[in-house]
Length: 193
Image (cartoon, rainbow, N blue to C red; front, side):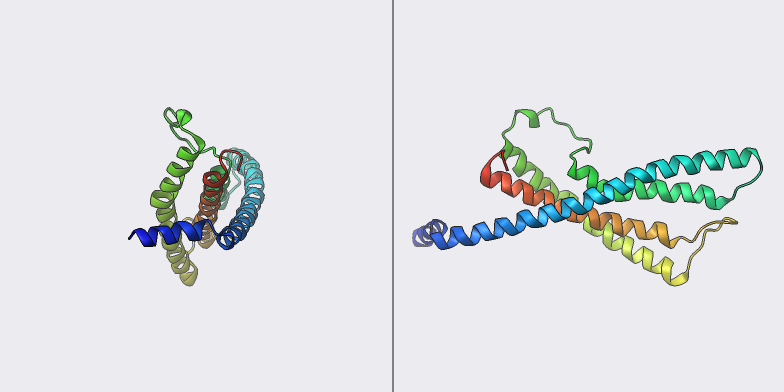
């Protein structure tokens, strides 16, 4: 057993291992940057969807006062509202704006916080996001195949809002991968990573 430990330590300190590890970290950094760029772009679009939701809400309210409008307008508000939360979750994670309790975390080192974030992402967030993306895709496919429509008169097709579920969770999964990569960099390089 001691021979195995010495061999691992010797391999870890070899120049070949360090060169290979640097290439892996460089690739991981590029992947994290690409994912972050994607979710920033989606986040910017989602910010405009908030304005679209407000404008549609005003239009719907005014329309009801003057006896014009449809259930499609109301459902459109719901669709936009769903898009904001489902598509904006990854951007919110990237910007570290999710609700959290940092009473103890403020006192911990960057490496301790990185380990806790990695554990939380791997043990909790990633499995839930993968499960919901898979279930959401299954639900979307059923609605798509049956061309399901709203039960309300003048309502909208259901597939666009059902597609938002797997799409939002896939973006969240990608962002979780990016966040794990950034925490690994912190473990390697300290808080400056």
